[in-house]
Image (cartoon, rainbow, N blue to C red; front, top):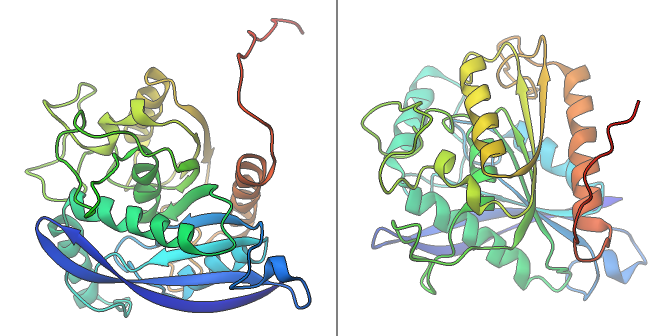
Amino acid sequence: MLIQESHVDVKTTANGKESTMRIFVFHPAIPGFPNASVGTAGRLAYLACIPIDRYWCAVTGPVARFARQIAGQGYIVAAPSSYHDFTGPEPLKYDVADTDRGNEYKIQKTLESYDADSYATVDHLLTLPTCTGLIGATGMCLGGHLAVRAAVRTTPSQNHHCSPNPSSTQLDPRITACVSYFATDIHSRTLGPHAGANTAAEAPANSTHTLDLFSRFKGEAAMIFGVQDTHVPAAGRDLVRAKMRAAGVVASFHEFAWAQHAFIRDELSKGRYDPAVTKVCFEVLLEVFGRVLKTDLGVKGSVPAVEHDC
């Protein structure tokens, strides 16, 4: 399957500020087949792909290669440049100066702005003539967090403002599948401006942190971590798992014994890249998205209790 690559600049509004976000689109195409071509009314599944890197929220080499792998399986992939509030769509460099910049951007960018970005990305996918209306989300590191948040966030108003009060808006049911790779900052409530890490099991009052919104999750999630991940330690992974289970989220948890943080990054990976584990994890993604987004299983009914047989 061939891939057509393009980009589009869309307007987003958050915190009273308008900005332009670039969305990079990777579209599968097969010559001679009109339903697998850009600009035709086909039946391809859609996938909102959130950035792969924590600090480099744009299409770096690892992001592009990841997106092409997914597009090659028949999905349309949209990768937004999340730091448009502060800089252009060009990726930051893998050096100390740009790492520091990325760290600052990550906590300066508000939850409202992150939410507006993911909502606008799905909006754009749904305008394409090959839309089926079935949306999944995936990402690594910060992107893994954003993929989860995209699946639980509230619906912004028509001008894409997101309410800080989670009870004042309706659910956004458009994302029904989520595959999250080593999501950072969920367990510590440290995405966006914050006073400090908070790993308490109980939610702060009026919290809009992702960890405290799992009851909104209406789709299915696959959470992937490395046991050797120092950014999301065992206690953090356990907290996310416990909160998801308490909220009744349909979720699978995969932890790989020798995988470190960012084990999928195949460029300047600080010795962390593990191609064998990466391959297994990609199969997890294909299973979840293939079953939820491509297979028509009908409306989910009641599920009988599992029989306790050997």
